[in-house]
Length: 115
Image (cartoon, rainbow, N blue to C red; front, top):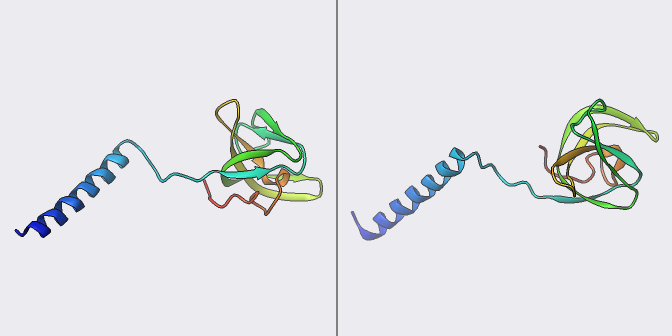
């Protein structure tokens, strides 16, 4: 086997081993955080449902770290209806979910990635 072919084979084998290792430990693709801004006061829940425990709040004009969006309970407030919720990184640690109704931007609070 030629030296260049051997190097190519080792490079590919190393990449495959790295990918297998990442899958074995449960690593997935990283989701980029997005700054989201509340346009009004809203509750942050433990899950994307109105019946979930309230863990925090968002306040008008403040910025928060949005991780991704997903569909949940329909929220009707201030003349807006939406099923999209944004997963937030809480300042106190952990995560919470806020309806996109309370965020500036599009119907997903300008968060591009789905959970």
